[in-house]
Length: 454
Image (cartoon, rainbow, N blue to C red; front, side, top):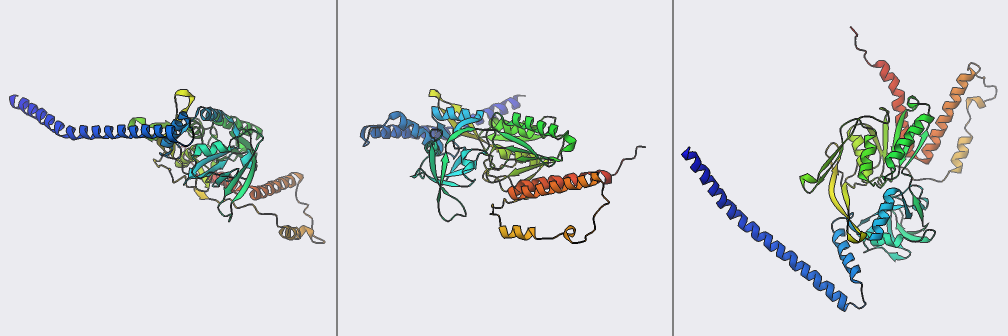
């Protein structure tokens, strides 16, 4: 016992010696670091006073401090920034689904303002703005060198007023001007419709109304179809959706998942992480789902696409998504302003971060550019003759009225699908996938082995 006690004491003493030897340099380094920070703050104060006293024109000290704060935040990443009281109020309005402006989501890339996506049914959408466009000037004033908030401020103005945006677009040799009339943007987060036997849920943003709109829209379309047995699948259209609220992305994913992880977030410290899991009940009752994405699908859109893809709940179709895999927390500040700070990265259920990589579609489908109608091609198609056009062709009298009606309905659906293919090729492709799955389902049920009841 005496030997054991002595060994313990010796170990304790040795531990104290080691701790002292290691802690000494660490304390010195921390003191040096703190001293350097205070020196930099003194430098900031010195520069602030010299600008205030000696700049060629009188400046507002509050503006200088606000610019310094914003510069500190924007130096971190493109999504961290300071929100003035007005900007913070605008942001709160946007999350509620109504705000004034152009209806365009932007980010910053190499000093230029880049369009993430135009929002459905907004002035920017009507003017033909596209994901990936670079805005190089606003009303003739260059946006190069401006912070993102400064550029956005230039694009704001009274409802009904005109703004001229200079755009650089890939594939266009020269910059060109786009005229947009500012308007009040009232966001309908989800638009639901039925194409043939497929319910299409177009999700344009993730605000407070997204999940309620989706739930109600899906329910209404199923009722109009006469029941879920008359629906062959669902298309979740997330193209050009710039994202929004994390909790709404979780709700939308959970709507179609019965169990399992939806998304996890990991911050600087292990304690900063969160994990979101699905709860029972699938709004689609197991119907197959196709998710449409493109380069304008960002943030919350990528959470939904990644969750449904990892759980093999949906087939993801389209092109590579934007690749914003970070989470911003909005922190209120004194004076009604706020700070938007990147606090975490998010990970799909399989543990992958899509930051700067995006979601890769299961099936890559490019949206072809719209082409003018080729009148010669139309005329050629019109001159093609069928058997029924031949003189003396036999009539088909073997069909009943019901059989003839079914054939005519099938032909009308095929023509509608062809028209949709011209209008929106990616959506038509998604619907074709669901048609194929629906056609195969009865055969799969017939061919499936039946268990012996004995």
